[in-house]
Length: 421
Image 1: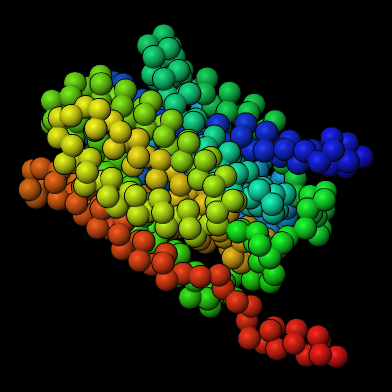
Image 2: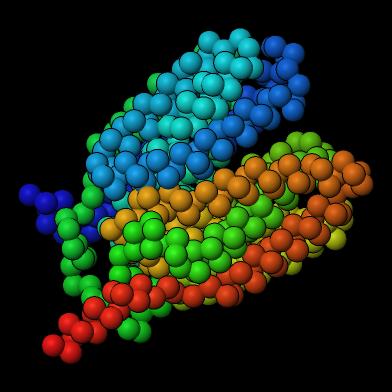
């Protein structure tokens, strides 16, 4: 019996449950920071060297997404979901045997990063097909779980597992846990039937977030100006957000806020605000429209980033600005992902979204690096925060120029001829 029939209208929410379970494992790339200090103490590595592990993992995650989409469009979600879970778990287990940086680059950065890219991308593409009516909310819950992962497993590893069992055994324990989580989630994940629509739902002209009436393949998507406008806006928005986020702890310390308070601000305020940004902005985009919410949040972040610096030592204002920055940064993931399905259709959404999300990878490379370079040149954070605000403003400009793409000319002509006949 089909899941939708067996469980009624909300049977598709089991896909959300499976996706959340998987993304709680895949999101642990963001928990890398808890391993940094113990590894540096054990092996004498420098911060720039351990930071490279995280950079490699982010790059592999972002730039493997297109491969995940390519496989998904041809073989369905299962192959990518199971392969991603296996590689992520293998990366963690193998990391326990790493005694040199090069092996850690390979195990955690490459193998774990490829697994994350294969798995988390396919989850989002599946949900865009199941939820044409609540696409923003569904994707927001999924990417919110990705963000929540570090808030759950980061403190667990840093405060419990590493002090009790050591770094190597912690890698092994987490690898086994993540294997169980990803395999159970992947067993739930599946595509809806062809032409699926939720029971009783029909797209209305008045609906703020309408699905595309034409299914763009990758070549056709790349021929639309909206793709480049949205991609640049996505990349610049992520660059701005990560430029600030990557500098937060040293910035707070430079303002005289203790290291414990700084860590609390980032781990708790940042994680909660980012999760809320992904979920609530996704939900709002279903009601108000994708571009409206995206433009609003990018505009807010353009003001919040410089204001974070201007807040000085006023702790309440600083923490409020941090929450806003993280909230707006989280918006990028859920709303952009939902927009991809709305703008270019869901038939080829696997590959289309895999290419679109490379914007996040570019931002992940440039943002932290640019923030560090600006600080090194002037030995203060003013220029980095102002530059982040400027980049967000430029991202807003590109998103203001973007609009829903029209079907290729030849297809519109063919449809007109068929209608006239």
